[in-house]
Amino acid sequence: MENRVLLLGGCHHIGQHLLVPEIVGEDDCVVDGTQIVGRMGKKMMLWFLQNNKEKIDSDSVVRKAYAYKEQKEKLLAWPSQLEGCTNLAQGCETYQGMHHKLRNYLLENSKPDLVLITDIGKQHRGVVINSDKVKYVVSQDIALLGRQKSSLTEDVYRKAVEKIKQQEKLGSEYQKRKAKRSYQMLVRVLKHHAIPYRLLLMQDYNRYIADDYIDLNPYYKQYIDKNGDQVISKKLQAQSDIALYVKRQIDSA
Image (cartoon, rainbow, N blue to C red; front, side):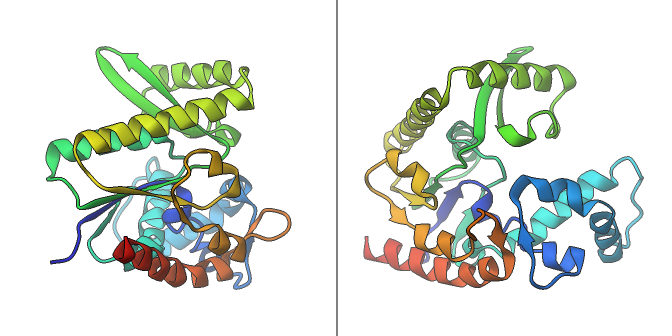
């Protein structure tokens, strides 16, 4: 019987931007992180409408276009090549967000055989907002703050943005301490439920989080150029190599 693997993580594990070359019509495409969001514009909408024949009202077309892109890119990401893997990764994720997802997952599903936790982006921020007796865990990229409302109410999102701004004033060392503490809280939940876990590390910056991890940084470096931008053709090629490497590491544990 194959292992049931749950993956909790961020944008490097959802195939983010892998369809940009197809959308913009450029085979050799280099993506400059968050700036690409504002540059695709009309090409994104045209691509979506060409691939979807259902009738869509104008108010929801942008939201549905991005959701469709994310869904299709996730199928190209390396976790899709890992048998028995449920991929709950999402863009702008934080350890607080993963903690929240894990608890909700365990309420509705039996325990997985293994949980894979990925490191998070240096600019990712997570806060908890309590409103009307409901706890909201809000994860954001600081570079996109104010532009990622998602399904949150105006009041909850406004409070989250303000809280993130206030915490940002505390500096980078505070953010590192908070990230490490949030990771450790996530690990405690896994240990409480006796669920094996492994940390996947993509970025050198995050080596402070823990001493034991599966090092994916060499694969990350394959598709990051000297400016820190992603060479999408190389990123696509790396997905199979990452899947094979992670599988070998899991099997040998």
